[in-house]
Length: 125
Image (cartoon, rainbow, N blue to C red; front, side, top):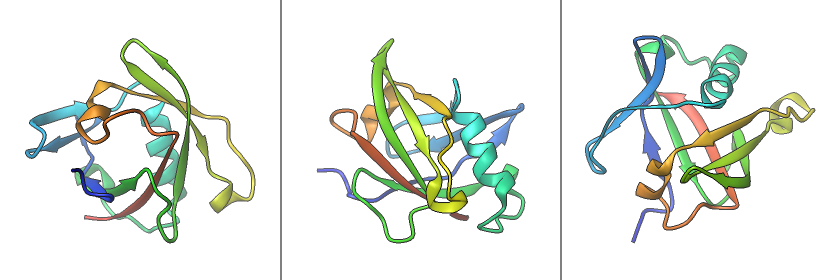
């Protein structure tokens, strides 16, 4: 059974946001198709004051709401074995952005099926 709150530590490698997770065997797993833009928006907003994010920071995430959630992703559709999510950021900006991002099949290293919602918190590493 998976933990209900999981964590990864994204960092920049050759211009891409990637992460390693020894528990799942993922190494330099890249974020692609809209997810880098979502991460950049979260970091560029600097509302969490994450210094040197390119060198690594922490994302706590769950399919259940987290206290003080920074980001909500709502499932849209499956495509090419991965899943598209829409970012809901009105928690911070009091307006909803329409950014979408694709999470590759590595999502299933953390969830048995694509969750309807993913809740995330961004923190210093």
